[in-house]
Each structure stands twice: as structure tokens, then as C-alpha cells.
Amino acid sequence: MKACVLHGVGDMRTEQVPDPFPGPGEVLLRVRACGVCGSDIPRIFEKGTYRFPLIPGHEFAGLVEAVGAGVDSAWTGARAVVYPLVPCRRCAVCETGAYAQCADYDYLGSRRNGAFAEFVTVPTWNLIRIPEALGFEEAAMTEPAAVALHALRRAGVDTGDRVLIFGAGPIGLLIGKWAELMGVGETLMVDVDLARLRFAQSIGFRHLLDGRQADPAEWAQKKTGRGADIVIEASGSAAAFEHSMGAARTGGAVVLLGNPAGPMSLSQDAYWAILRKELRVLGSWNSARVAMPKDEWRLALDAMSSGRLQVDRMITHRVGLDDLWDRLQMMRDHSEFHCKVMAVNPQGMAKNNEDGEDNRDGKHGIDSSHL
View 1 (cartoon, one colour):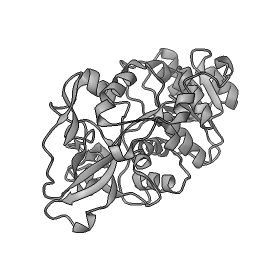
View 2 (cartoon, rainbow, N blue to C red; view 1 turned 120 degrees about the horizontal axis):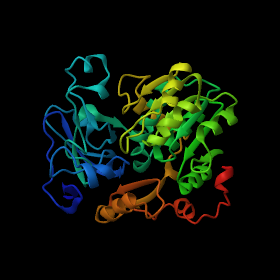
View 3 (cartoon, rainbow, N blue to C red; view 1 turned 135 degrees about the vertical axis):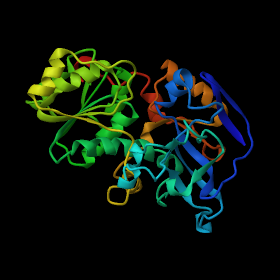
């Protein structure tokens, strides 16, 4: 099969490799769409995976081609998304159902071969059927959609809350869309990339700030009158980490979600804000894959298939495996605006999303100081 294989840091090659074979309890999945996560970029170009060679890619959907020993044959031909974390299901944490905190987990795309390939083997436990109304590309957005939902649920979002999001990338935008579905009062968003803010505006967000033009904490206080009820730091920026504490209201919640781009530290004033405002500072990691109604993957699939959560416009680039390396370099270099880059099989190939192209030309007439 064809696959994009990472042989070392910065050394990815599109090549022919042996077809995988499903073992006991596994299926062989034909990959139809796999999104590129922001975490894939440092993994491929800076930090590496847990072993080499390895095929990255963990946001994916596809078609079950074959089943291994002990797997119900009814899975053959099923359309499915894949929860990429493979828990041991034996440790003390797994026994509570908190599989994302497993003490001995495996992970598709970083610890075992993932889905930048034509085929991948997947444990049956990790499969979730795709509703008929949903296409493969949208279904491949389930992982980031579930991660975004988990962050809001960690904060205990309530009707009428004012939510401030640092970071207008795919996760930040999905958090904003979920917040609107949950009936929040206002959704505010901060970024330092004007193209991202223009894109956020084009898909319906109204309260936007270029963080280079004004102090985010002061802006949030002015917009809300008391500070945001919930602040979600989804950028991984040390500056946003600092601003989050000042932007939250007294008694509010700050959720830390973004993968840190470097060392994170707080000033004395920000630390005092946590103490004096009695803030709840919460970590958010991955998503919950448990029985309904808390299975955030099924909640995400239901919301997307019903049309309540619309993710298709966030897919700005669609590429085949032969062209994926070029797009990964584009993402690393920020040489072109992008929201979600999707690797798709030849049958699913399409032109780049025209909305994404339009959002690069600066024709929205936005004054960044008045976002």
C-alpha cells in the first residue's frame, strides 16, 4: 500500500509498504479521510514519534475491509471513525472509564502506525459507526470536535455563560461552535493571526480581537462588564496563558487545552489573580470515550450528522498522499492560510475549499483594531 512514513525527525517519505494484516480483535480499515492535527507538525518536524519508522495520522475515518480473529463479521463494510487512543483497559484509571488517562496506553499515529496511509489496522473497541447522513471527511473531524467538546464540559459550561477562547485554529473554532450550541450568552475569541480572525468572522463569529492590538484581559472585561465566565486557552501560547487569568471573572473557570509551544510561566500578578478571584484552573486532555450520554465521540457524530455542528467549511485543503508532504511544510512555515488540511483517498479528492481560498485575500474589510 501507499503510505507517508516518518523515518526520522523531518524525514517523511511517501512510499510503498506491506499491507497491514488485522490481528485478533482488530479490523483492517481502508482510510478515506485523515485530518492533519496541529500536533502533527512538531511531531513530524521537531520532536519525532515514539519509534521510527512510523506512519503518523490520528484524525481519520474509513471503511472496514476485513476483520481479524474473534471479530464479528458484521463489521465488514462498515463506515467508521476511530478513537486513536488505545487504552490498556486493565489499569486502575481505565477501571473508572477515564480511558484518556490510561497509565499504559498506545496511540495511533504516534506510538503505532496511523492513517497517513491507504490502510490501517484498528482494535474493534476503538471503532464507532458513522451515521448515514455524514460523509468521511466530516466524520474525520470527530476527533477534534470531541476534544473541543471535552474542554467545555470540563468547565461546566452553562446557559448564558460568556466564553472567551484564546486561539482561532480548528480546535478554538470548534469550541466556539459547541459553545453556541450550548446556549452561551457570548463567545469571544482572541488570536494574533489576522487571517485566522478573518476566517472566524466568515463562519459566523462576531466578537473577535487581534491580540497584538489590545490587551485581551482589558478587552474581555470591557465586553462582559465583569470578565468571562469561562476562559479556554487553546493556543498553547505563554502570553495567552498569562492573559487568561486576567480575563476571567471572579469565581470563573480557566481551562488549559492548547499544546504548549514552549516553557509556560505566570507573572506574580496573574498568580495573584488565581488566588484573589478564586479561579478554577482546569486541565483538559483528549476526550471521553465512555457509555452514553457522556461519550463525546457519539455526541459529536450526532451533532454533525444532524447539521447542528457544521464542520465542512473548516476543511480548507484536500490533498492526496503524494502531495501531503508539501502541505505539511506549508503548515509548518505558515506560508498559506489554512484551517483544516485533510488527506483523502483518490475517490474523495476535491478542489481546495473556495471559502478557504477567499479568506487569504484580505477582502473582508476588517480593521484589526476594531475586531
